[in-house]
Image (cartoon, rainbow, N blue to C red):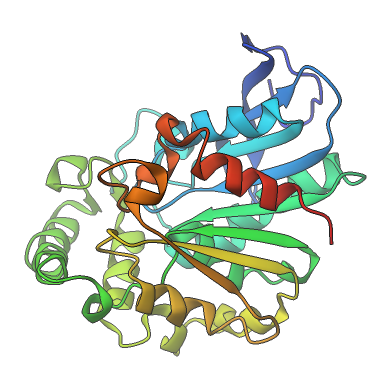
Amino acid sequence: MNAGGNAVAGAALDDVFSDDIVVPAVDGHPLGATLFLPRGAKRRAVLINSATAVPRKVYRGFAGYLARRGAAVLTYDYRGTGDSRPKAKSLNGFKADMADWAALDVTAAVRWMRERYRDLPFAYVGHSFGGQALGLLADNAEIPRALLVASQAAHWKLMASPERYRVVAFMTGVGLPLTRLLGYLPGWAGLGMELPKGVFEQWTRWVLRERYLLDDPALAARENFPKFRGKLRALVMTDDTWATRPAVELLCSAFTSVTPEIISIRPADAGVKAIGHLGFFRNEHRDTLWRSAAEWIEAEG
């Protein structure tokens, strides 16, 4: 099914329908995506924006959960990753960086959902980079509500020790040399997913900067952070070694037109031993973390 269709012909997942579709980016690049729809009435629209090197299938459970509560939900892969990478072709020579992900891919996904569900309340969910991208969007003023999950200004010194040293050693000692040698970062290098050269190089530059992307003079889109005026909630997992409270607070400080609500979540709050950077999206949190997040997404005003 292509992006022009509204009907969903996918298989039913309990009381939810899902279908793999293609959403065109701003420049026409095809983005692999999955649309989840409730069998009953649609009461809101939600866009889930991925973390770096995380395929959209990781968000399938959470997307289905929101759809069962009456939301039309879209997940998708950024260009050069998952189902949005060139077919049967090496990423060597593929041009893309993280700024492109925001300007061309996230922007298009937001517009796609807003156009098709213009009469429904809209919410933006961003995981890690997906939350960072919110501030880079030129039209983020049109987003009324955003939930950031483990989204941070990921300067290496704000990460927990000893993870911070492992990250710097990997990025500068392994990732960059491999990326420059091969023309892309191979999945076997440690992240489990191939990344375009421009993506990994820009990511590394940001990690090494004191304010991450917030003080990158080459990134004009950082000026868009103050444009966002919607409701903003940011979730911090206390055992997350990447998105620590100081790193989340630094990112949120760039949204100067609003007062972000920052909530720390301990694993014990969810009745588990660990959550970390990715764990929020595990199905075991259906009746705890997911319910709380869904209730906030569904709130009025």
